[in-house]
Image 1 (cartoon, rainbow, N blue to C red):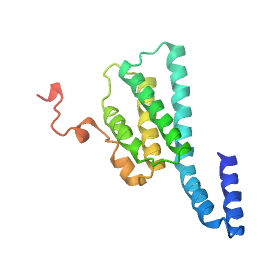
Image 2 (image 1 turned 135 degrees about the horizontal axis):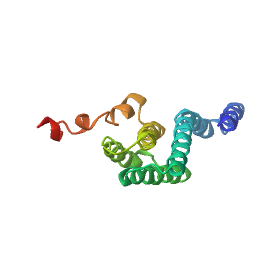
Image 3 (image 1 turned 135 degrees about the vertical axis):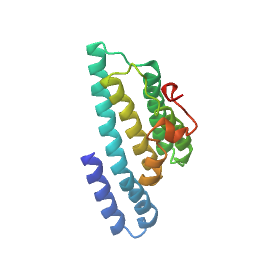
Image 4 (image 1 turned 90 degrees about the horizontal axis):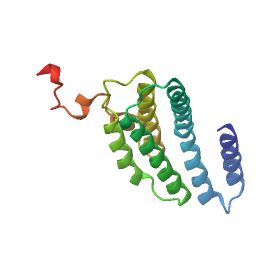
Length: 162
């Protein structure tokens, strides 16, 4: 990430010094610079997710299949983001998939232990980072990741509440 930050700073400086190229390249470099923050956060969150996944496997902890499905969906969304960036296509298309994943992540499993819940939390945090990377404002991205099932589904009533 440091190398990417350095490279974009150098590229922006070069774009400023090259008047014939400055318009297009400067805008592209600025876009890349704006992505560095959320990209760095996403990388950190995925690193935590991987470390906790390894711990869960090594310790033989129960991880609900729905949680592993969320991790797979996150990987697919990240791959789509990568494809869109390479193709210089709008990232807004991946937002709906990320929002759907965010909604799925509000449901905890009653038998999920610490490692599983850390996985779920890291999926949620990474979704926010990828939403920001895709152009959504940070406050809006956090709002689109419901904190609880009740926030996502206000009509939901737990069995013990009936």
